[in-house]
Image (cartoon, rainbow, N blue to C red; front, side, top):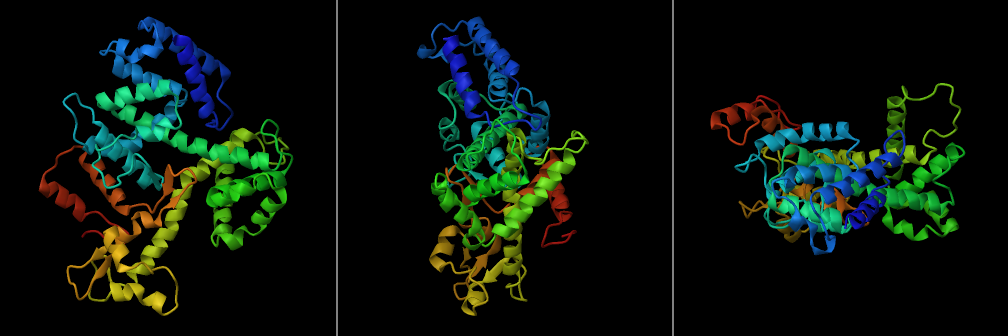
Length: 434
């Protein structure tokens, strides 16, 4: 019934409720009006009983726009047109370059490809159910990822639309925003855990910068070292973990320095909205502002991790022989720093490298490691607690492809045009013209 659907919508809102805009939470009036609109919509299309599958009663000619509207509103993006517009701008190059169906949209496999490209290139995220894992892009649905987080009402809408209708650019942006929100919602669970671990209220502002720093450091502890979550109800043990974080994670100090820079950037961006006469002792003292900081941490952490990937790439390229510049390192050179006790980075066995697709054995007497295949493989991904999202090295090939797609803006181009554009493409290791 429409009442049951409304109840499902409220569950969805609660599941994604940590998605709080910078200036505060979602207005109750919006949720009420959205629910009322949904009830009216279901009544208008003649839904008598949701238990019998209300989608079978829908007018199929009206379905595409209805689904886009409902996904946009129900998943919390109805009041965030600017965010969707930004996502459309980012996704437009790859969307324009993909082959289209006869009605102008893309199919589910192409949508997965586009979303995977976006999350890897712009977030450094590997999303289970969307990313390529040895299957064809249309080999499996990304819906299992979403089922664990969405009530059945929204899943029916999503499955019906994705499975049977080609996607437009606007719908692709909605799906990207939805997956981002699912990732954010998991981070908000950890933020809530951090508040509760120190008996701090999310309804009241933090008293000072000491409490603000404590919440942020606890969140980052839970986020970067998930096994520490077992101490959330053991105050003394948790404080010990916070004290020893730099020993358990050699990058801890650098990570917290990056978080400090991010805090400063957010404060600078929000300076126009701040009351200059405000005497609040903690800038991120309110839960909405702390949530905004956490969202930015999650959005940017993959890019931060990619700094290490680039450093590792430079270390590998320094091992290239003087007689080659093809992005390959001879296997003996690959192992040399470890054998000399310089560092312990490159210790992977040949069998593993072969399985990873990183071992070039064209010359059996001089096998070599393919640098991009090694760096962009899953071995350098850091998984989150849920396993839905991993942080991986940002594939620079995607950046080059995006530049080509932006220049061509069509699924087909002449070989001469492609060659001309590729010749003018610079990269980290190759100067233009090529």
